[in-house]
Amino acid sequence: MLIECKNLCKTYGETIALNNINLNIEHGKIIGLLGPNGSGKTTLIKILSGLLTKSSGELTISGKEIGIETKKIVSYLPERTYLSEWMTVKQTVDFFKDFYEDFNEETAYGMLEKLGIKPGDRLKTMSKGTKEKVQLILVMSRNAELFLLDEPIAGVDPAARDYIIKTIIGNYNENASVIISTHLISDVEKILDEVVMIKYGCLVMHKTVDEIRDEHGKSVDALFREVFAC
Amino acid sequence: MLKKLIKYDILADYKRYGIVFAAMFLFSILLMTLDRLTDMFKENRFFQVMMIICVMLFFAAAIVMFTMIFVIATIRFYKNLVRDEGYLMHTLPVPTWKLIMSKFITTYIWSAAAVIVMGICFGIVSGEPLWLFKLDIGWELLSSAFVEDTINGTPEQLRNFFVVCFIVLVLTPGFMVLHTYMSLALGNLFHTHKLGMAVLMFFALYIAEQLLSGVAMLFMSSEMIEYLTVIESVVPFETGYKYMMTSLIFSIVYTIVLMIVFFIGAERIFSKKLNLE
Image (cartoon, rainbow over all chains, first blue to last red; front, side, top):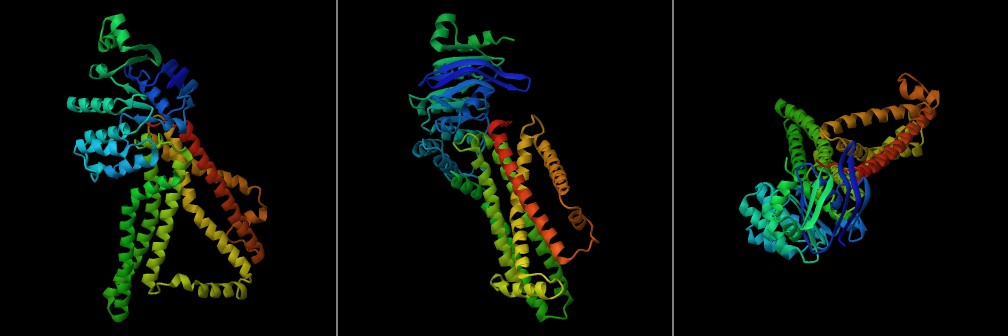
């Protein structure tokens, strides 16, 4: 099992962000992490990436407690640009190569070349969209066991969305799993194997996409609208 | 991993520091040239006035350079570990203490570079580029004045005093940055106005440090407190020297303890209570 999560809770003072989450994720799956704003998706991703610590419960990735060892096998894409503006593209590639043993430099340069991004280009001269693409390329150029992608297609044009989805499918190895948190379900539905739905910090559904179609006779997008109807 | 972190911390600011250091060198060459011209044209008021202005500007530039190190260290830490770049830095397979330590060491590297630059600039301005290697002459003069004339001290006392003062000087930039790192870490605990709260925490920590050192003074002898606080107090040299050294050594120990507390405090906060926006 890649992710094992038992009674996971996260509280901020009085506020409960995650409430008794029980979740198991296997290797080799693309999972859609779905839920309305403030449901706890980002909190769960941040705990998995090691940015937040859990309040209680158990959580392991590949049998390891969250820490330095799990950071070596988790590739995380946040919902914002996190690369230093002073860097050139080459320096960001060098940075990833220096800190992640599983980083594949050739894959990164190959993808950058396809987009026409030169290694000498400075990040501070790039548009927000180009920076996001560079970031996605760096994250997906790792041979990680778990990819955590927080809103990877939010705020980008439809053509860029297609590119991002193609990059995700084309670059994760088949033993790895990808967790994609998004509101734009119809755009990613076709690539998902499983769906995890969270509401008010509680897990409300964890099913395969085939199960959803068979049991509910609906698309994931339609089911989401039904489950989270206001 | 620590070396790699330091490498990227240096890469981030080397251009900025390069410009400042180059400006300092140019400034010192300008001063040296003006000094020569003032010597050549002794009656020329213009060169004399220019010389005075440039000396003042040179010292102002030196102060700006040292202040800049502290400001850049603070900005780099804030952007790298508290703001958006923190999403990358805190997910690297690197322990948190190394993230803080790399910034701490980088500050010392730039401080040392600035001291060397100042030393060279001073050599250029004074027309004595190897002045640092002639310090023994100055030391002998100072030592004989300290031993023989009005003070009546021993060479060991003078050397010990300088060693203690040097340690205080070395600790100062480290203490300042760790104080700031701790303030930023505390500010990070708040959900809104993190930077504003960090500024508040900076002053709150300062007040707490002063109160603590005040409490520690209560344990000193009343005579020593009088010596340290009353300017007019007249005590024999030996007693005054002993009190001065005791207070300086206390200040060193106190600074080191606070530095350790701030380092561990910031590390614990970023490890256990990281609260990026």
